[in-house]
Length: 439
Image (cartoon, rainbow, N blue to C red):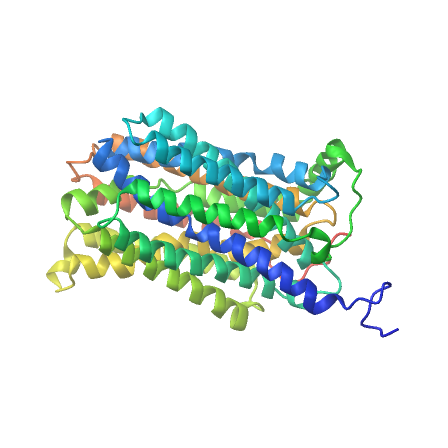
């Protein structure tokens, strides 16, 4: 028997890689494409439901609360098997919950749907997205620790799913920007709901055994899994890294809702321009994944993350100049600035996730990949929610409303200062890329 064959005479390489890339490629692509219906949600709330900027931002952040529960979903995914499988069924459940939510919103929005009702179904949709993301992230983490998967351990699988998500984001924003002026939000919700039905059908057609995932005991139980997660979080290099990473987001008061109203209400920027701005950002994200995979994998994660954090602050200072109309005086049209600079700033927040997720995958003890990666993304989700609420509080304190933006430059300056602060404690992140993994 060939050395490349397993005990049953199978060649694990190509077949396994094919099914993994199909499953993860579709999953992360749909995850990136979620911006398509959410663009419609923002305009539906502003134009049809008539919410103000603060209410919009509160809703945007509140419906992300299911993301905070990711450690629970990760523990369940690690410990509870469904028909002998513990990854694929959860991806299918997540796709089903999302499809049901969006299609129900379509039905209810034919009449006067309340903000509360809409919020509940958006919460359910994000619950489904969270469950699917946890299972997908766990597969990536497991393959990253697989001894016979050199491409995964070197970060190529992480880069692949990063690029799949980016491609989905590019298409979602491009189509969303074009569709928002041509179709009703309900039509966009139907399209995305049917896309989720397709993902569900593809997922249930992939047998988990074909993925050849690293074996783990199926009877460890939730209590045992929680114990292993707790032990992992007690390791200083893991605990300090996650704490710093989450704090680096939470400390920044986000002003996304305010900027959305400033661009659409005050500057009268067309929805298509906002769509192109997001497309530009997603293209930059895609390029970031390619560049990282080809040239930056050998760079220490801490150095990369510090550079990204500082760049974010610089872009926020640039926004102050934009609000002060400095760029307009230099001959730069508002639409060009929004497409280029605003598009890049929006995705810069997520650039840190790629090197950080690879670092955590290396440090993650075997057997709790799903729960630990879920905990990381939960901490990030909670940090974004805190950031959003801080932004609402800051806008309220400065008197910024949907019609009065006089205090916005000061708010953006405070935002930039807060972005610089985590750099003073970045030593919490290990400065060695290659640490011995805990078995």
